[in-house]
Image 1 (cartoon, one colour):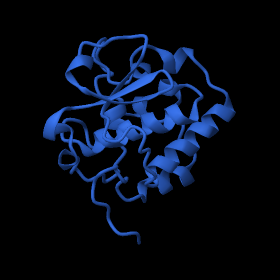
Image 2 (cartoon, rainbow, N blue to C red):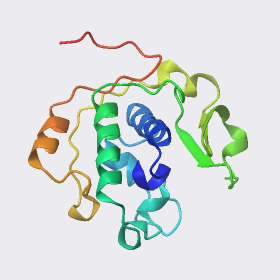
Image 3 (cartoon, helix red, strand yellow):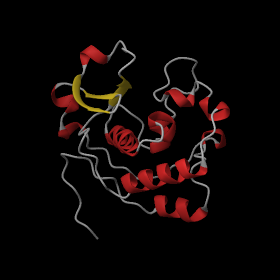
Image 4 (cartoon, rainbow, N blue to C red):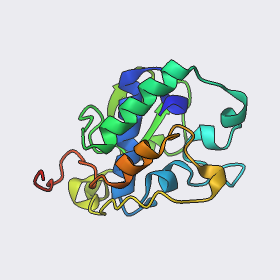
Length: 173
């Protein structure tokens, strides 16, 4: 969330919600890492720019910015929903115009980011039925550097599926 939204709490929460929405949608991988790194092996086609533009190796973030981003991500993974972006599955900054933008419904704007969802049933609550089961394993090169302690990893591994706005939620345990 930090590389995509910068050090902006509202933007980071919105980006985290889009990632979790994608995890629950059949058009995308079923894990957070799968969603974030989808297409990163290609020179074009990555879903989250920072995974394929070199940002991870050339751009360093302050420890305090990482801590804030980690707290926002943990908050999202623990089931807190950012209702601002609703069922958004796509976003971009307002200074670019992706080819897909006119084919989607604009749902919200958070700072300089515009958030979109598919029209019709593909973008409605019924399309978000995949269950999030964790299993955030993958190639070591795609490891989340923000998760540095085993306590964080154990906490994430034990989480139930995230809450997605507009979908029936499991009762609290």
